Image 1 (spheres, rainbow, N blue to C red):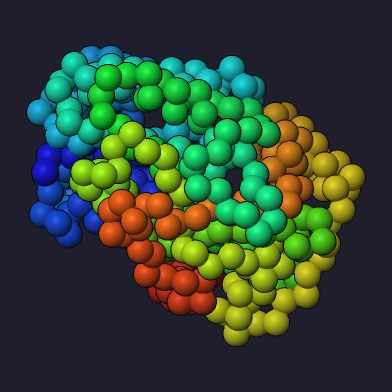
Image 2 (image 1 turned 135 degrees about the vertical axis):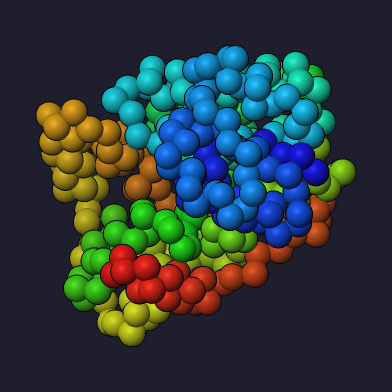
Length: 322
């Protein structure tokens, strides 16, 4: 299979590229900076320089591709307009390029944020009405609309929390847990789904190749559900540490996020820790049901939380990140 991957130099895109390489697929990567694509060289990846704002680069990258995997996206922005410009408009341009090149399938890596929160004990399946609660979630839902409006066969995956080797977000939890103290938003009862990066890479390949997945929205995750408190304790357990949790009530959490957002703005930087993000952090549940994807593609997550976090910790230590 000839496959185009956007975001291949990132965490999820890197795991996808590895999954495609294991199959012997021919991989092309659209990258903003070829200098950052060094890790892709051992995978034999063809690199096309460009970004989602460049129609000519998108056309070059999409030419001759059978499946387009769109992983790239903006997770931190100064405004909803900025989110939309990348996540919605960039996706629309890539869809147009893929359609013009005659690709046989378009696989979008969306986000659980696009579907919105779940109810406790009721993981989402992809058939529900979407109700995003943040600007980021709305921009990812708009990206989905750009995909579903096209005539190109499509599949959409909405991953929950993704962790594993090379991830820098859950790394922050490991670093706090190493100190024996870690904050949790609310009382720690928020229900969460999660997926190891390698499992997500395999899920994307399955979604991009199985005949029955076309025209469907899926939640790729392990069926295990953990509370936010249990997740942090599991991180500590992987390190052999007991972690004392520090509950952060909503008023305090929102005030802290406002300060973080303000300091990032003054420094001219972008952060995911914003006041708007509090609308996600204080929901009751962010859970998905992987059964539909398993049914339609045969894919199943290999790593439960215990084994996945242990694998992640080993990689962090070996790489010198902890």
